[in-house]
Image 1 (cartoon, rainbow, N blue to C red):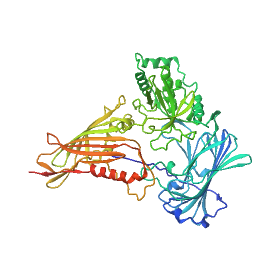
Image 2: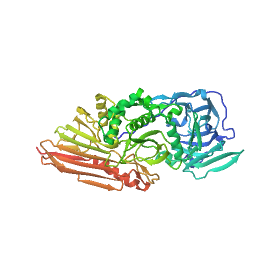
Image 3: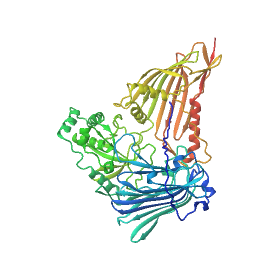
Image 4: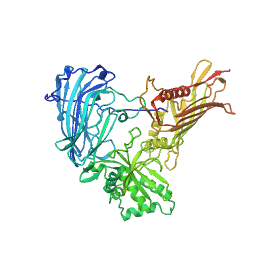
Length: 640
């Protein structure tokens, strides 16, 4: 099967208006860029000044002024100023200039020149998220762009995070200043910064400031940590905050969680009609686990997920009765509804705030603040057993929460407030793809292949989410895209066992392969694992600096039985092969059945997700060896 990764890039155009300098005290043509800063850089921050002014618990201003020299014409997004806004974050103004390599302004822009788009994710039912994009393009490189914009925050819960440097970018100098006029105190978390914060009192207001200088360009290495883990960052958060007349305390997780709990008070009330419907789904059941499973199935059958992104609605759940009547909700609403119906059945559960995303950086547990983008449910039975539920999925079995939620610190919510817990993480024995295939080889180089693939855990979840919502025709089209064969047709495919009612799903397919075997006048060269081969050879790195982050642990198991054509015998077959590392192991064995068939038995296990940088060479050798082994051939020679 193909291992596919993809990236989407937005490109837009621009218009122009009157000239006005932004950095009046700098002449960028007379300030040469250090050769060291130019090395391996797509762009250089010449100067960047960011100011966050917290006026009171409900109001803050965010001002950014930046000049950037762009070297790389292949990355047009470097010249795009992208500003997200909504009803809680309003743009006050935007101005920008393009400067040629002599530092002369050749084009100027204002907010009116920016394109304005909905920033919806494609499935949000209600959303006020929007984005302004100003393309500062020029055809002669290098050139410099400078811009300034200011935003008003109505609510201080969502204060911006400062990233003075992006991947592939060097920095001459950049600064952040936080002005706290509230007297309540502002808190921060910083990482990957050489210099410590400077704290001053100016006109009775507390000021925090950070400066960075002469940062060379840094790229995320192959399978390295997220950029937020390797580049400088400062997160800021208020002690007390207000959002649309809702007041909270973020000084600790307990109080932050209490604010979220109280935000949903009164939203878990069910009508008598809803209660009767719920109780009808569990009639006759006495086992708590079976009750949870039945009600989770009821939730998945009755409701659908939609995203709600409207101001406080991005946090406050819709009432359970609303979900019952309308049969939809976002992650907060569906989790809240599931909590309410479990409560009606006498079973305790808790909402859990989490930062979802299989490649997202981990939560900073020592810094209580808004770090979450999702809610899941933790159910605890009277015997102490815990069942996790992903309430936005119509297809996950109970206990499956998806790779993006596994093994993460998160905030469990109760009437007592917030408590940091860790979500479960599935092992390599629980995330399995197992394929049993039979390949009948013909002397003319064609072949017939039948295969059944079983999946468990995260891999099963991906299959369910992909295949359950689509038609049979679309499923066959999906299967076609997954196969590595050049010329084939699908004779039969069955997806009847793609089910979410148990911990395993499977699908079957039968193929005619028209050029499976390479041949000469007397020999056939038979690929032994073309169905599930890896083609992954990590690049050579003289010095690895970053850890290796893998998405999840898993096991691949393959048994392939080859029926050989008459008139041929085996001339050569690869030797059995095994490689063991402290992060995984791989083995492939070849044997003969009583019927004279060649049987391949293959197993790949990844047993560790985080590898130190000094294990990169072992990691590279491991997958290089797997790729070579997976692409071995059986050689048959004509006997007649």
